[in-house]
Length: 60
Picture 1: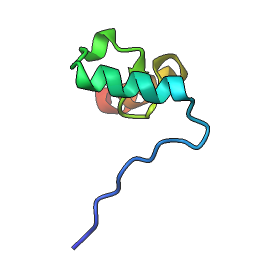
Picture 2: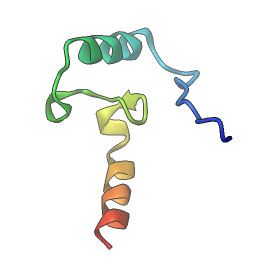
Picture 3: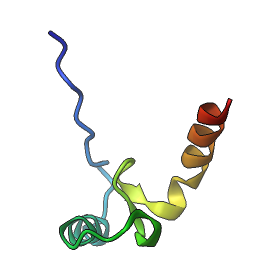
């Protein structure tokens, strides 16, 4: 049986990022309004290129 991998918070994550991730998850902020990315555990503006690349792969 394969063990699922769990995303880990980056070592350089700031306290502000951790706080925002928690608040946005606890308050169920819609993904379109979030400033953080729960998928990549980073600020939304820092992972936009990854989201674009993922969207291109899906659209092929």
